[in-house]
Image 1 (spheres, one colour):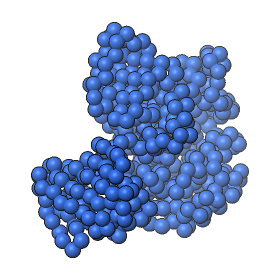
Image 2 (cartoon, rainbow, N blue to C red):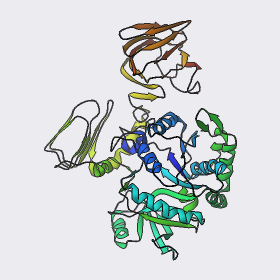
Image 3 (cartoon, rainbow, N blue to C red):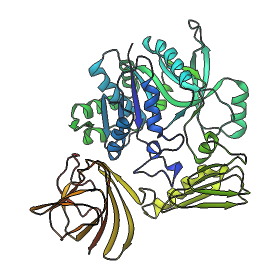
Image 4 (tube, rainbow, N blue to C red):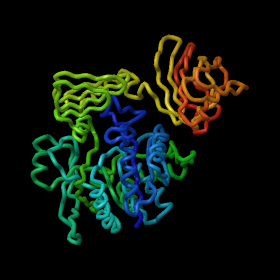
Length: 478
């Protein structure tokens, strides 16, 4: 009985702004134990009995991040499905189900968000094994987290009757309920009949599509069309944009689980957390004697119950109580810990002002490495560029800017018009406006260089891409 993990990685993670940005959301960040949440998810399924290669579903803008996470975990993916835009979880899983059925007509899907933390992996594996016996029989399984407090930030699942043919309790799903007020959450906790809704599922691929088609046939039809017309692009499967645009947007909860009478819930107590706010990282972090969790270069004097995250500079606090402090190169977020969720108000305001801070960091990651803006003014920009070993930028030219490259460390092969140059530390070259050029790192260590741009327009969309080993379209950046 093979289990096909389906990892959903389409979220933007704005509740962990300013560390999480839409171009680099929380699942790709090292927030807890030196590994990213995505990598932790992969590690959990690597040791899961009967699990085969996973299917990934992610935003096309995050495709190289997702592929890199799989490589970091020393794994391979059966498929990496790229959504041209988000349509919530029900269509994402429908596409994964269609892909899984190509390989195994009896495929059982284990649907996992990429951004959850589960510390008791053995308990998780046991719950999956229990749920799989129900999935084989056509049940749609969800995992209900046994609550430890009256949480108002999660939806809940109310359990129904226990299934009589199980030694370990598995329950029918009575109903799903939205995030409650505090008093209601306390009543749920005291009753013992409610679980936190984990957003994790287990079911046969064919059974999921059958029930989804019963309630929302237009969704299944659109997903089938999007898969039929999908294009293979390197390691990625690009859903057809036109077909997927016609697909309704809905979650598994609303589209299937709340409507079917085949839903069951498996209780799970495994130190689970969806890391949905900065306060969650305080809860799961290593607290010092004053109840502080600190990351980076931090000095906390007479401060208690705080989560303090520093990035590239010293962060110092005095007399702070139960607060969140998160410092990045271009933004600082400070709030009482019990108002951590309200960071969404800041993000919304920034989006209204059409500012760049919700979208990306000052350090922008690309499949070949990263670049960071050090200085920007009228008609000039200075960047720090890091190219990974073996990394190659696209063959490109610019209409509005010239570039001067100075190698700081490593070795560069530079294509400049008809010439090819090898540059080492302290050497430089000039790329005149309109000249076709390319940068490559042939070495074993990262290549670091300083790029000075001058010209009338310095936007990232002034790139005419002529060739690219990563298969990016001309509209992609760098």
